Length: 364
Image (cartoon, rainbow, N blue to C red; front, side, top):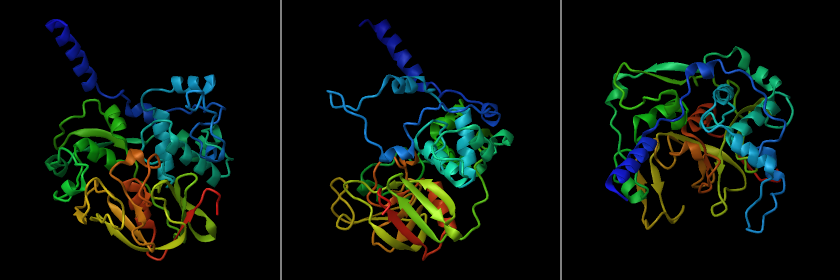
């Protein structure tokens, strides 16, 4: 390939890599109108967990019918204003959709289904007109707000990366955010993609600069939490109050096939904020070539995030995560993993002694 042509291709690649996320304005979110979901059931519906898996083709891969493939093809590529609005309204009711990303995904659908159940709107995970009205969608115009960068924000210094190896992490002073983008996204419960979509010129910020963020602050439930359930079938942590009323719910990663979560009922022993993480391969799991005990420093990118809620089952607990986008989508080492902000809300709602029950898919 000639030098001019090679330089041309390099320029195209660089432009593609530096292109901002699909832009989205605050007004498009704040004034997003209601649009009904199609009548077809969602592929991410929690109720699908009990249904038979689709038949596999000769190649061994699960097949999709033409309508399902068309729905996937027709899905918008970037975050959608209406979905952002609904996700924020759900989060304000302590029915968490996890990381708010403006996309039609599993955690969004689980939260919709939970809201419908709690408000006697019927089973399913569709956004219909009754659900939209019950959420307060028609009157809600304060979803996106403006945040002014403080002098403290501007002084923050971030590690370039967090090494995967625990031995290297143990040598760091703090497992902090790796960028201002990550910091602001987590502070306002957003995906980095949505933050960039709202702020296309988001690069180096200085004190006094204004950015568009989500208005996620809300009044937390005031009822006392009497018990919690980690529901393995749906990947949800549900908090119950007096009269078995549901107080709050959160998408969660609950164990894995290799390291399943425990069975039965336990109690909350203690709650630790900004915890250190003690790695012990003899008690927990083997990470890489690390065969000795290590103490990892605190921080939002600590393996258990910003909160550790210890259970009466040794080494098991409820905790945050350095990867909020992966909650309920990847496995854990037996614990109940939430986004950092959801773990912090749970910690604020419960006390030591609260019962914690792991519910099997059968409901036993």
